[in-house]
Length: 113
Ligand code: FES
View 1 (spheres, rainbow, N blue to C red):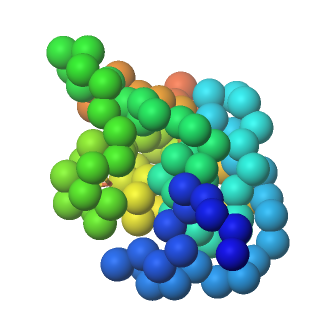
View 2 (tube, rainbow, N blue to C red; view 1 turned 180 degrees about the vertical axis):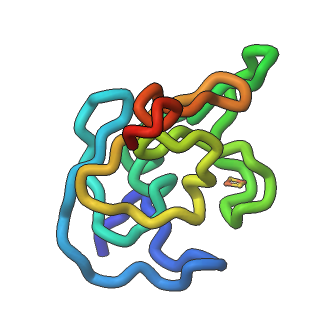
């Protein structure tokens, strides 16, 4: 059995299905992922240790893993504050580390997104 850092059986989302390999982007860098797995799981498997920084600059990473603590929030496809531990991977997702509460993408603020 292959040993990885991936979450095989999430307490909220359930067992990870056998699915295709896709690609997401962390701050523009390609990261291999499995379609439908929690974004957090793909990031941890890729060795990501910092998901965001608080308003005071403290680094945060996955903590509760069930959508309760907000330590894993990131900007996903231009939307800040997304809980990556309970958000499923879609091919081509753009994930960005956020500072503090994050900010909306310029396109969204302009009403273009
Ligand atoms: S790790 Fe706590 S909300 Fe995601």
